[in-house]
Amino acid sequence: MRSARRFIARGQFDEAEALIGHALVQEPNLPATHVALAKLRWPGMDYLEWLGWFHSVLSPGLYVEIGVERGNSLAQARPGTQVVGIDPAPQAQPQARCAGPVQLFSQTSAEFFTAMPENCYLQNRGFDLAFIDGDHRFEAVLADFMALEKWAAPEAVVLIHDTIPLTSATSISQRKTGFYSGDAWKIVPCLRSLRPDLHLVTLPAAPTGLTVVTGLNPASRTLQERLPSVRAAYASLSSAHIVSMPAAFLALGSNDRDWMSNWLRQARAQ
Image 1 (spheres, helix red, strand yellow):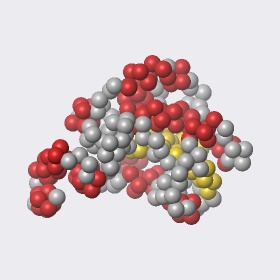
Image 2 (tube, rainbow, N blue to C red):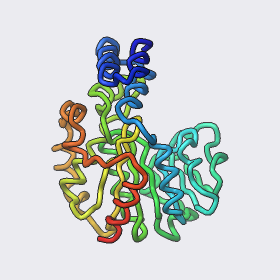
Image 3 (spheres, rainbow, N blue to C red):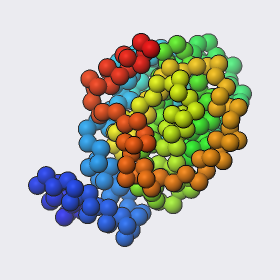
């Protein structure tokens, strides 16, 4: 890593990335090295900064988060926002980090949407902003998206984390490395193919991308009706080509606030 840092200090980013990539070929289970590669490949705002930006710009009345863990992302919510957090194993009282009123449900998202608690904020109104960052397997991410869309308010936005695979070893369904984003990235080509009615863009934000989806339709049943064939079609899809050429497959946007503001304005006007 010291050699890579010297390359970075001299502005030799391609050489630094090649050196880090070689290290990961030799030993793929190096979380800190993966983080360094992600920051090198995707400079600028990271996903948490973007999440905070969306809260600031959208001022959601109701925010739903799947995958709370320690509350780093939950803490991005503003005081005037009602928050619903869903996580089967939250850590260290994450709700204490949130400025607004929080309902934290310690269960899987599948359990939550199968039998939503009667006192849940979501029973009274649709969500304005949602963040999917729970189970990183494609099947789970797809299920979370389908379940959430039914509860979307007009002009709602869904953010999906881990949608740009960093390496092939870290972007498969079964976890084999410390740094892991799973095959959540498959949700992007899936939605682009089967739901052209949606407005979708993926921000190249470290460490593993953030996909923005709007134009939601709570009445849509397209994904549900095709679920068995979708699972079969995407089960064996490899990330190899996407790792090397993400822009060709993932509808990448620009890691820039002004660019994102313009995209969001145009998407909502359509």
